Image (cartoon, rainbow, N blue to C red; front, top):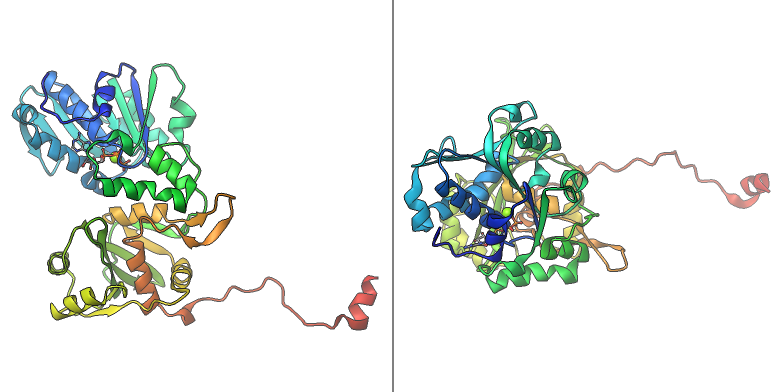
Length: 406
Ligand SMILES: Nc1ncnc2c1ncn2[C@@H]1O[C@H](COP(=O)(O)OP(=O)(O)OP(=O)(O)O)[C@@H](O)[C@H]1O
Ligand SMILES: [Mg+2]
């Protein structure tokens, strides 16, 4: 079939793969998700009455990633677009004229995954999906299973699938994706000088064991509690190749509650102002912003925002991390990009294996604004001092104790 697709090598690899299970392990932006979806849209156009299930960790993740790319694929390529009868936004289902459907779903538990059967299954970012859910889905898949993920640690794919008969492994990285801008490539490669282990995982697609994650005190919540007290918004300015990140921080019950408002590239200051308005931020709410951009701060102030520079100092990164570590951090499920960043935010590790006292300067466009709020709004005096385990009674070593020991 002539698809009209502009495709990378990964598309044909996946489209022509003949194993029952096709595992796409890879670095970030290698084109895994896009290529697998292109293959699935082909199968959908070519075969009557298929059921194709795309499963992910949760709906916000699907929406921000694979679903967005699917909408692009489905409308961009004429031969594919012509085969599609409708897209139901509420149920997230593409229906084709030939009776085939592509559905996007997430499953709460294994029981939930027992409902329905399918011809093709795609498990997107599979390290966010539990083995027992995958297992139930795979039992009810007649033809082929695609799986993709970044290998930041070993998980059930490595333990139970790779190396077994009828399982094909395709490893890819950004060099296999001709559609990526050079700036993106450079950003991925720059990990090498910061953190070799992350570079292996995200630039080369090699299974790693990321150690030294900074935050393990965070949880997903469904919503901000209605009685949570707003503390402030945090804002980090991006530019053409970095995202501008903004989030809102609340406090309730001694815990922090965090909601992502904005994560987008190439925004001017008037754009930021519009986006913040659209995200529902009030001009009466204080925004703590990156103090390295006084001009942008002033511009937003003139647009009517209450905006203050973050108090940066020599040790501000370390201090703000220390403050944030003292709280339980509740992050809304919709904060997809913050969840990704916080799951990757780690201390730098030298080639020798020594962990440094500074974070890897990557994936921090929402972490930084969170730190700004911590610096300006969460007082250090609130910190609970760790208690020493044993009471310390100073004693002179002269005479007494030393002699007792001899
Ligand atoms: N065939 C294609 N045509 C146009 N754009 C493409 C194509 N393949 C990939 N891209 C672009 O490259 C970007 C990265 O691709 P994709 O999201 O599939 O990578 P990935 O390997 O799934 O990355 P991650 O591991 O971070 O999820 C996409 O957002 C898309 O814009
Ligand atoms: Mg992907």
